[in-house]
Length: 208
Image (tube, rainbow, N blue to C red; front, top):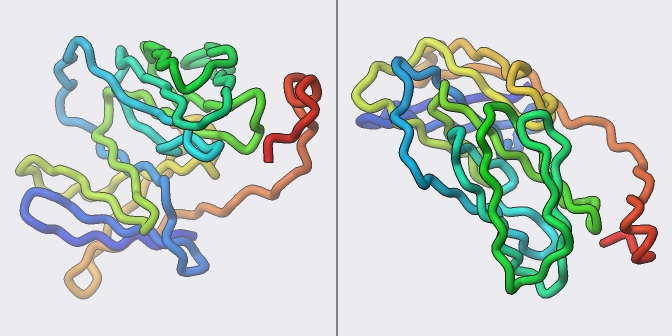
């Protein structure tokens, strides 16, 4: 289980997510259902970079219709793809001189991979139903309440739960010594050996 500690400061809620072992839980998405739909802003964009053979950020939150740009800050080529229902696409091998973009027009969680480097995995959470904040490496996130009262509950999604937003867990917030606390049951999946992809076999390397 993960512990969530919430402090109310002005119009924001600061949330600290800590795993069962006491370590910060990074890349957890905190979801607050919106009271009214957001206003679509044409030309919205976000960036998922590739640095040291890793996607950054690991988890992004965007609204439907957002263009996500995929620069390559490495000095090697990458091959970005997704088989997710919310967005199925492929960006074939490209270098740091290119910055291709993909329009994420459907709600859902899009799992990203690189056909050359299997350790590269990231997630794009596409939704206009929730205000979303993603925890940093210290397990900290801030929710903008916009003068609303702190919610009685929030939903929390982490990629350890799977790649469907429906698996997000509702978290009841309770007061404890002046703080709002909750717990989310989440644990890392069992690691399995993975066969090299066809492109890895072709290039005769594992991408480590």
